[in-house]
Length: 134
Image 1 (cartoon, helix red, strand yellow):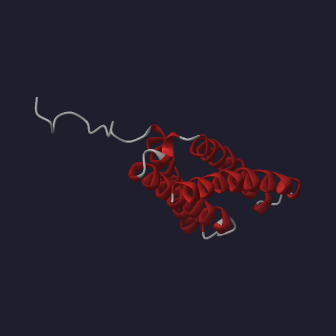
Image 2: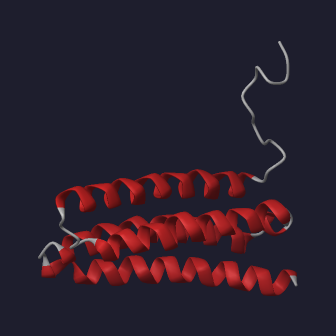
């Protein structure tokens, strides 16, 4: 068995970076899937959801994963843990509520706010961790 036969496992990456990369890849595929469904149907009602999936899901989670991979000591702190927990908790809440709201369920609007606030607090913790590290 050669090194090419075994699956690549980046064990040198901090656990939080791996979580962010996994979550980011999920949102990448979810956004692509939603985009295909919208294009095939000609119904672009959920274009705001599509944008949030890609920007706050794929792009932001991947970039924060890169930061944790490049600065592994930063990934060891409580701020990093709070970031990952709050961002990954708030984002699906916000996306589900935004989907419902754009589909005509006005009562879902507070859910958008709850999810957005959780994600924002998480990204605030990430920002504070960067400022402390620099």
